[in-house]
Amino acid sequence: MTRVFVSQGPGGLENQGRLIMSAEQLRRALVRISHEILERNERPVAVIGMQTRGVDLAHRIADLIDSIENSETDFGTLDPRLYRDDLGGADKPVQPSQISFAIDGRPVVLVDDVLYTGRTIRAALDALLDFGRPSSIQLAVLVDRGHRELPIRADYVGKNVPTARGEDVRVLLEEVDGSDGVALVRRNEAPADSGGKA
Picture 1 (cartoon, one colour):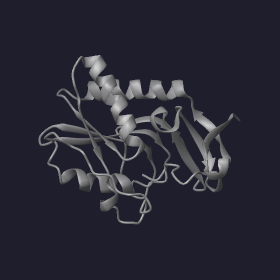
Picture 2: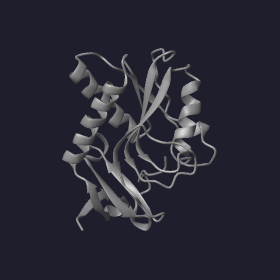
Picture 3: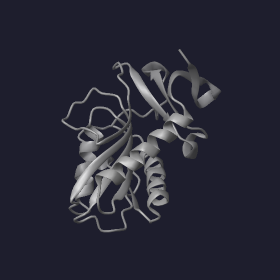
Picture 4: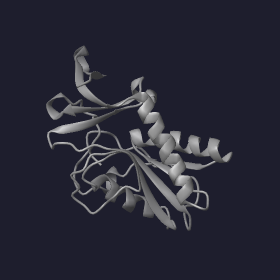
């Protein structure tokens, strides 16, 4: 089993986890997802990242689509926490959603880091429909960890990772954490912002 330090917590203590995606594997997954999005959609898509790590992943996907198609992809951000049916993430301030383009009648790809119960995605669908009526809403996630509570499925998945309920998937991104990778950590080791709650 490969062990990796996944974060530095308060007081300088580091938490270890099992590496399930290296930086290169993460990069390749995003390249593959970008190509799959282009193959599935005939018209230009809008890419919308969900707070917090989904925003950085969506930005990378939009940049990859731009480089492949030599175009400029509409990019936005969405914070669905006000639409949740539970109190998940209530300790963090809600970020304003930034969608400065029309989504009516066009395909939209929602991007998040980890798909878990499906509750965050359900909230995101409600939030997104307040901005308009897309022709389709597709979901791209870096990791699908299972344990769905709602009938929600990702259209694009970087990696399927079966997990136990006592585990969390920790996504590290260069923009936020200084390095890229994905680790599986036991819940009692997981930092407060460990992901895996979508």
